[in-house]
Length: 172
Image (cartoon, rainbow, N blue to C red; front, top):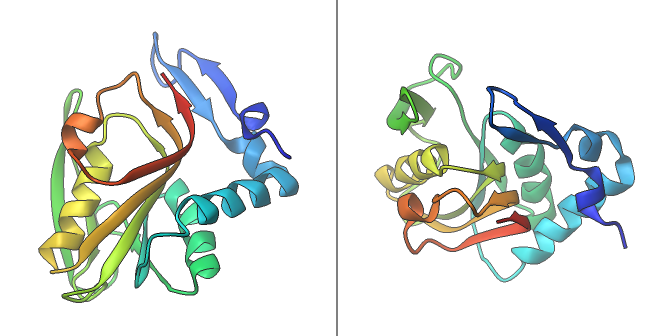
């Protein structure tokens, strides 16, 4: 069995001093490890029914599209402002210093649908929460969130509340 932690590289002081960045590039670059991560994510979420998978730009696209194919459902991108060509809904969220915004097509999910929100990593939970709020704004339900990595030493749970969050690797 592939140990996914062997493919996560720590980059000290990136993007700023004091941060240890969890680099998934080695995992993506190894076909066996990448396949194992997708298979395990699909297994971790096998009990969650959904009509679509919502992936957060940009690494969430990699895992989200593969998970959507594994679950035989469509994929919905959540992107930074100005990247989507059709009518969008948007949500602003707080960063450590300032704010950011994400967008989704206004017809990407329908009222009553259920989705799984996916990204490579959860840290503060700001982007994931904004993605969930976009889904809910359009009348759909977030059944679960899936991540390759959860940084449990950062209080992301405060933002996501009691949402069903699954992660393959946890750092605490």
